Length: 117
Image 1 (cartoon, rainbow, N blue to C red):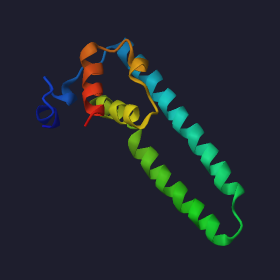
Image 2: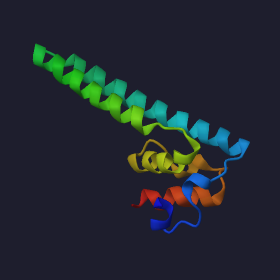
Image 3: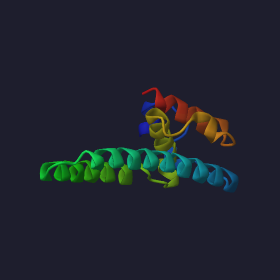
């Protein structure tokens, strides 16, 4: 199991989330998502403004398709994956550990450990 390899004390899919923690996680998740989407919109506007030929349109299309695939796969809010999702979002800069304040210290510790891998 991944948790055993990482030296974590309990399997990640056995983590229990309280109602309050679920709300904190939902807000953090949404905040990261909005940051990434806002950044994507900015990039798309810049790239669209530079279109001068048909090939530029296809390049933008390919870029958007790849980003959609990445974003759709990344933002998985299933309880069993949240620790990994948060770690990836912190690693990529869309979320900060302090925005997870209120979660159990062990959950925050696991996210922190995973960001360094």
